Image (cartoon, rainbow, N blue to C red; front, side):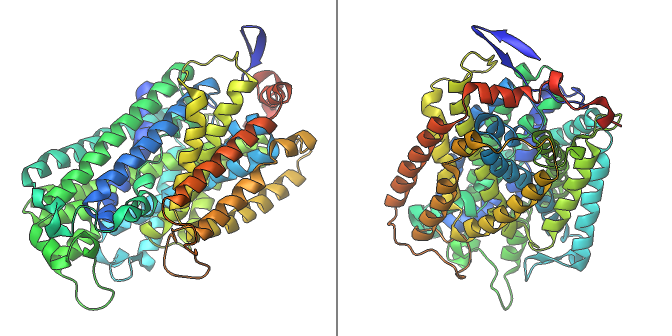
Length: 568
């Protein structure tokens, strides 16, 4: 369909088979359910271990980052409200060569979060069923792995009910998921110890600014904020999406940021000072690899807020929190199983994945994509058997995905300045490159170990997509214009890897290959910022011409859509 806007007709993409049955509240809760998941259960502890009381700064940095990225997603999502939007915006702006990379990052991030939430349920659930999680190895056991698979089956089965039922189920869960963190904040404020922020706990910033920046990614801070883009992923099923989608993203980001910062404050303040003395500060608040762990510390590390509530004498709150530890990750895993299928659907619309993934049933459920998301999640259950070990990899993949949004915003502003923009981000010429810099900071902070692993996964992704496209006679063009529009991409990906190798952050255990610490602290951020600006403006210079960009959008409009026989 085409909409006349100013001097030119701006074509708008549309999706086939999906049903627009999700309202504004459903869209807000879709994003919020992904934000308030296992992150709030563990993030405050991991951030405190990494940075002490200065973890508050890490949450503020992460909050600022997601606010900027959220505003960018709000504009382009409302502009092109399609399913799996993060996998499709770079395709429109830069063509198939660049689009395959960001599309695969989007899919990787979407299908790996549900397994993470399953592991979070097991970690908290071991309080009642000790055999599902091994606290000594911080891994699920054999029965825990089986139960994680069962949870994945439940997520998938509920998704087959259709988006309307799913939105209602998720909305019911969300009222609980919001109420419990807010209740926790209010109750723990009455157990506040101001001295926990000072010298007795090792000082306000025991690991320095490097520890704070490492906590932004390695401790799960950014991971906890992730999910605000779920309204973009489900945009093809949101009623009046051009109006409701940007409002939903902005509302969800505001709620999530406020809750996470306050949770960190009360976690730090409510900790029993005697435990901090025993552990020699926040960075020592861990169980030893061998020997006996202090029971109070063991309770806190196995379930931070529930354990803390028990230690300070709030057993009733500890019980509620352990129930929420099942409900909260369950809701997040459920909605990510949904978004994973919509990203697969979007990649099918791009013709990166087989077009069979765009098939929908009578309820508007892309059932083939849903099955693929289930299978993909099972793959990631195998090699990463704990919540913490998956976080770095998924965060890296997520931010690589998010890096495509600022680039797309800058390209769209130039390619289709006359397009309808229900939400228009002010000073986009400033925020688009800044958003790209922010995304690259977070990638860098995730550490070299995460980045080189992502590089291997990326190569696998290219092979998979190349194999799919090789057998598709209607695959997108990989002509000279598409290669030119992506000429910056290999320099960007390889350059980030080299800077990370020369930089300050390892991202994990001291395993080869490791970073070299060649670029000094602070100078590394200058290098990332300058490199990001070079890549950003290079991408703006080589982006697809207006006509080529509109042709890609038009190929996914209603007039040029897949034939009715693809539906069942």
